[in-house]
Image 1: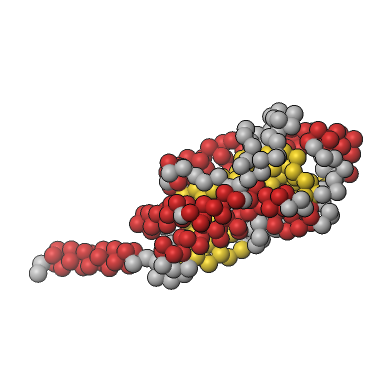
Image 2: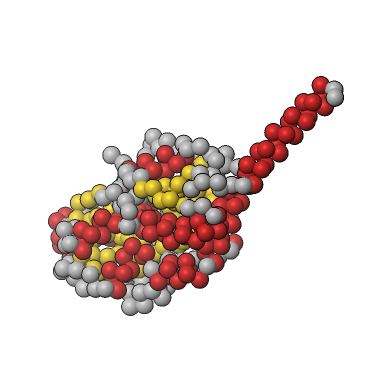
Length: 325
Ligand code: MLT
């Protein structure tokens, strides 16, 4: 064999080994970083879709909660992980849409540092309050806020999170200046709302729907154009008399930039199968989640969504004067 033939054979050998290794992915459990505390919406969605993904992939998806800095701590860790398909992340509208406007030194670029896998769920936003809040509808709430706004506490999941950015936007629309109270996720924030120690928040439907249905908290409005089938008695913001506050969030799966395309395709396929599974769908729909259409589930659609969300949230948050400090 000539030197060139030997070199070619060696190269082909390496390529074949690489292809085999990727072809047999995954060979061990996959870590899915959830950048908030357990029990909140990001965690719940990760566990619901991850369940069926594990079955398709033949390996367990293990959720790791890495909370802090409105989700940016966990997502930074995920962005810097080995791009081998064994670390993926459940990001959302906050970590991949709002955070760049609020953290000038953010260590990742949502549009450049990830291999998008696919959208997992749409999550309408609700305006909710503790059970003892002295108002029973949005009008009463707005009147109360006009008179007592500076005495009121608003819970959120950290600067840049969904509850924080949608909350800042809400406060700017209604011209309220509550004391903002940060938690490591809206799971623990909701516990305090139920315990009457904080007053209100704007949160994703999958977190609050069961407590609204159970009468443990008050829901003043859902910030979408239509009511949710999961909460048919909750009026839209428009129906409740508030213009200019329509906002929805989303959760999506990301891998670190450089993850091989074959692995991205496998993960995307597993996610799509999960979203087609009857049990996964029921669990998400019962919580008010919106199942992405087939066109919305592709990595390309998620990339476009991230770019448009950064462009949408940056001016909104800058106009509201929000910063991480
Ligand atoms: C958020 O507000 O960003 C999320 O609801 C946080 C969480 O999943 O706990």
